[in-house]
Image 1: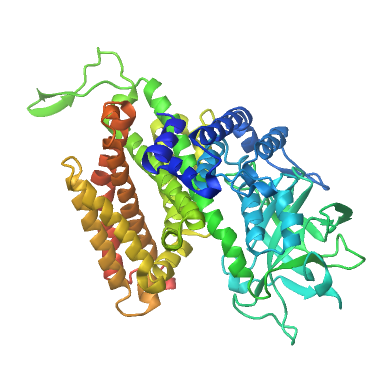
Image 2: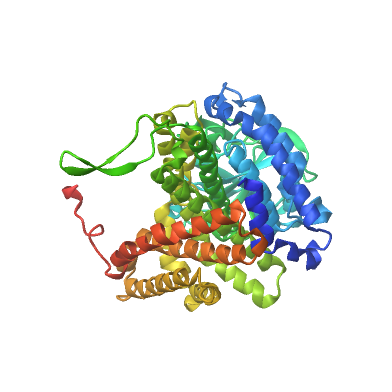
Length: 619
């Protein structure tokens, strides 16, 4: 079963994406135009990305003292991507967009991620521009966002700092007004920034004419001190090269300097940087300090940045998913072609005891004929295809939020709030496990660079940290998302799950699975209440990650049950291998995976303090 056939089923048979064309925004589209976009992206990914995935892994970015050097393949792939129009696919016609549903855009981007995640990291540019479209002034949109959408410029997200890591409260980058008339600059109130930012993906390169950095910084109070906490954080546009109000480069370099490249375990084709802002290496108008333009209101930077961060989190979930599927496809091909071992026979009486024997005179069989290899393949399939379905479901919620009626849009918004931590973290954990299983299927060869599965694992290992660690996502889920608005988001999700259960329980082949999902949902609900029984966040959040694992498994079981209903709805297709495969993956998930939630939720429900109370000196 190919990625394209999987996407076709998910988009059209399960999500009903074609029905979106009945909405005014998408009225010019049809399944034919959706398919044309998918065809184009599949071709570009096949020709410009996949052949060079190993190249960009081995030829890492390097700094020659003046500029960052990347393989020529990266330039050509980026150019082809920009020319495809995908950077602005979901934007209005008036600004050069295609007004595509985000559901279709997400599906189209999956081809690039499965072909080469290192080359295909255009995620931040689109997210950067989308943030500016939501929070920027008219001129900021025209000058910065539109030049990102058309491919001239690229964008970054600059949050982390060497001393702060994930703790945004401790951001120390300063932004001070740039002179007496700082508020009169047409591009926005103009500030001078000083500080350092770490782990900035695509922070420096020559792939585009300019790089638009979105930088979190604090404006000092009247006493010259930075406001503690996150409330004092503001957001600034800091271009690498200075531009005028018409969007033309002025020939002046902004005071943003590359301090070094981070050489990572994976994603080696994407430059990852430490940037110094305002160190005086490139003074603007004779003054040190990087020039930045305020976005939105002072002190509201984190509110603006979360617009980009939430989009990036879903994108990371999709990246993790596609790396999991890439490993699955590779190990499936290997298993079909690698002969090793012979079928089990027996038992046979030998030396007074029963023994399982093999007939060594028989020819070897392909390893896909061994039950344990099938187990590992089914695990990968259930993780990867289930995660892809979840991420596309979240993409459909984005379309619902933007184009549905008021009630549907609000429901979609709240469901997205609850599901975003799962959409990011579940694939980044379990599709990484899929990559580990892909290596296992390859045996010793899986550890060599003769096969791609070791690179897929290395690339995917970053995603558990990328855009918020597992622990941060888990605390967001249990500490905020399931409680917000009186728990209404969790109730909405439970309503969706129960609707699927009610349909499935009427189908004999699915009734047992429906009952198992119902029991799991009850366990999650009970554990949520038990975690907060004392009202103390420290008690509830001590086991937030096991809670998120169980929550995620319950969501994925729901997705698989819903996919099974869609599969059984097409009588003509039931005998096809793809349908048999989906039903088998669903059964695998319910038999092998869903039962795991009991152990996870036990420590949550009992507020187990084993980890939280463990004394430091006992380590």
